Image 1 (tube, rainbow, N blue to C red):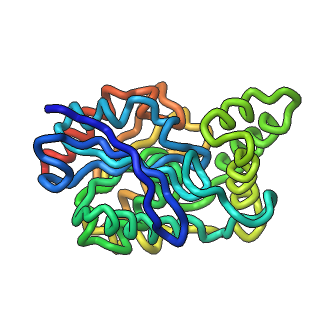
Image 2: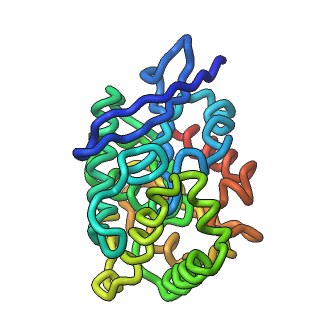
Length: 269
């Protein structure tokens, strides 16, 4: 099976969004629900590296990888650098995701969301249950935890340190002219006092599709309580996967285990 990739930009959510598709020349995207990859709060298509292509090849499925608005090669965020991101950005991006599926003529998708991307995946599954076949989350947030805020404060200190390696690394993925907006859009939203009470657990009961909820036990941004809340709240079938010796990115730290778990979940369809 030839998993060729292609790049394109589309308009969704009122902004230009950059997309990389991993398709098959023989079957295209319509035979089985494609995997749709949703990156973390500071992420971009390029930060996934080769994981999407490897997972799609292992499962024999097409894939769609999205740079959310402001990230990677998508249209830059607008507004001020500090405090410019609206606190309901997860909900807004979930709406945009469904619009992306419409633009690409994808009737149903398998979502694979990492961190903020996992939160967005859950919201999209609640908003449009007929469009989401399976929801796979890694380190998804459904409420604010002290450890999350601690990890973000530590990231903020590292970003603002002289000759910051974190800033330089993120600039390689987002560009020097936009990296500050991406970073502070994330930290300022999460660390703002009104966001301390943010929670989305009340939406979980609207999710009817199978959900695989993955969490590393060494995740510096969340605890297994996130997974317990997801599994306890979703109306459809769920599977928790808690991984030892694994941090915030299970697809990096435990790629083989994650791949097999996804294969097992999709086999139930």
